Length: 402
Ligand code: CTP
Image (tube, rainbow, N blue to C red; front, top):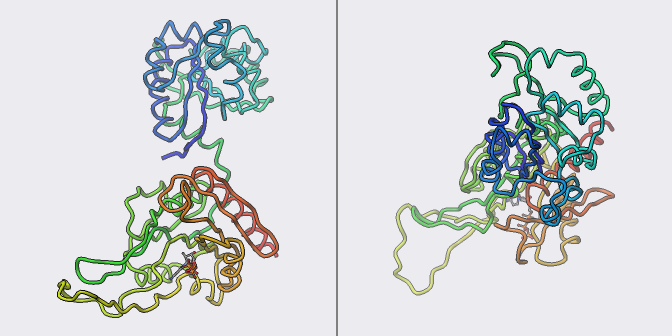
């Protein structure tokens, strides 16, 4: 599925029969994670009632430039600034003409002039109107100005004719909008990622684990896939959905994680170790359930293999990125870890502070590499993951070029 997590889409609905499909489009955009606000023209309201869009978007619908109450709530300039992208769907021949000529006599055309966000249009009209020189000239003007034109498709039309002029289907439009955001920073690069905790058995019913939720590693996998990478995600036990386009390998113990990683590391160009691997496992796992016969119980633990260290120590290692979770002296400890393990990059975060780290939805990272560093966040984990992938891609491509 397309990734529009946290993207703010201002959907302008103009007066064509395809407006009924735009209600479904709002739902699909929201399913992809977008925050959607709807602006309707007067013509659009002849086809579909604002209440429909209010219900599917969960937000009041904006329709008037001159209504002081609506302007006080979120005025046209605020809406224009709020949007990450403005999408006109359906865009009628009239709407295209008015935007091409820079008119600003209603809320939607005013927003189109007042926004600095990318503008996209999904034309929908009768095939003769579409083919008309006037429409095509207007489109040429819009394209020259950098407006994205999605479609139209061809086929049966509401007017009974057959030809070009149908609005693209909602899912096609969602993909097209997502394409505006994704930069192919890691196109075709193979990325191996570990995520989540590991689980070290004590006996058949008990185990040692930690508080890692896997959210950060899964977000990194999602961001890498959205950047065009071929992603393998080796995941310890965590109840998270697999990000789209990602190959997932489920493991439990550190040893299983090491096996899954070493089987794939030779092919990986980038390795990101975000898993919270248990440092120790039981020297001897009991074959049957331990009974509580003694007041004090001693468990003998032995060190687990260092997965990140193993990969970084390979003869031809991939570009390796480690994580460090620290409660104090973050920078110094993280830099020691980076040097000690021979990593290309390390991403350190505070743990044990409210609102970030394990299981939180937000995170902040201090990223360090030889001779440089950057602070990311605090922001949602997917946002931080996107920024991390941007840094990784820059450093990776620099290294490949050297
Ligand atoms: N890591 C790993 N295999 C292990 C342990 C850690 O791959 N057996 C990776 C983690 O995925 C993370 C980094 O190493 O990328 C964390 O480094 P580590 O030195 O293990 O951190 P801590 O366990 O926090 O170390 P310390 O207790 O010394 O602070």
